[in-house]
Length: 178
Image (tube, rainbow, N blue to C red; front, top):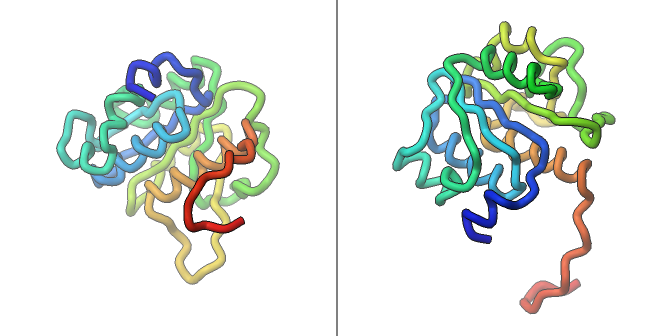
């Protein structure tokens, strides 16, 4: 699919908000994942870097050209705009009362947005307070955090899976046996 075809293609009604993400490589990785699943757009907030950037491009591999993005001074402003536009907004954060990602989340009714936070501090509390709730990724190991780009990938995949179950792939030639 060309960039022009991507722009015309139907998108998953999901906006990914990055709240003060420091690493440009993480930003690029999120762009690439959003391209893979045809996410509607990315909102870059605060200190989160914006294209053009060699570091973003290194991991995005051109997805910064295909995925629509907007910049907001704060994630609070982005969430306020999303809510005004009719989105339900969830912070991806470990918080009291959070809903596990594996729990029943109605992703088929209406537009959704997810906010992912800074690699060290997470999503700002003021932003969490504006959200409709928090989604937590279940974790069973000794570490209780994930890289922000990995967390984005998990959440985006789960939303895509719940919205549109993947068809059985066509058989491919290769060394893998069914």
